[in-house]
Image (cartoon, rainbow, N blue to C red):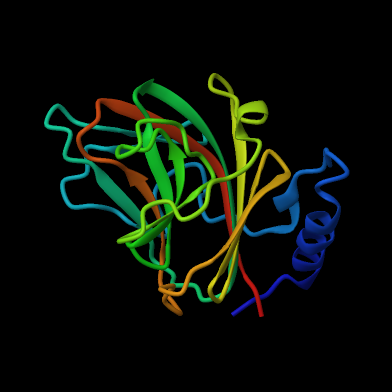
Length: 204
């Protein structure tokens, strides 16, 4: 299994200065791609897939008429890792997120179904709801353009950057050790969301 020490060092250096600077360099430029932009190779495609489509390097998820939702999981499992993607809100009330090793813990993207407000970059933990909320999202989140979401999962700790600014860190006592990463299309909503430049790297 391959590791990326230069990328890891870059992340933690930028984390230390993120409150003072607004780095213009893309965080994940050293990270390996987890999405080839052409098809869903490397992902567990749901049976009878009608939700996830790839076009022009962009992965778009859109709910069907029954709004049953779907999750797209990586085939590979991760323990300590860096995840990065660009996302863009589509139609409807967007309620999405990135599952971390299992479906009980995620980083929210868009409107929380329970709290009815945008909690992008905040952790949702099954049984606890949103134990902490990301800070400064209102001034960072672009509702009509691409956003960069970066997540570092180290054991029980989750640290999140939105558009290259550190916005949240949380220690989850219920985090599991190893599992896949998932992209969520929440059930119940008429909505769509797009992803591109999805990258994941293992941490030692």
